[in-house]
Length: 99
Image 1 (cartoon, rainbow, N blue to C red):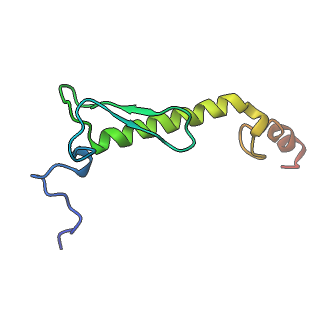
Image 2: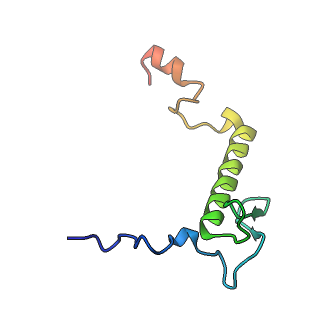
C-alpha cells in the first residue's frame, strides 16, 4: 500500500515555499526569544531573491546553535553536570570506584 505521506515529486517541498505571503524579497529578520541578537535570513539558493521556509529554519537553527556554544564557552565547566564527560570529578571518582 503506498504511503499517504509521500511527497508528490512534481510539487516543491514545503521547505522550498516562500517564508511569507506576500513573498519576502531579499531578507527576513527573525527575533528568537532568549537569543540576544535578531536572526537575519537571506535566500540560501544562489541567484534567488526569495527567502524560503527552509532558509528560515536553517538560519534559526544556526543562530540557536551558535548561542548555545557561546553560553557553553562563557560558563565553561563551572556549570557542569555531575557524571558527564566534562565533569572534572568524574576521572577521580572512576579511579576510586565511587562513580
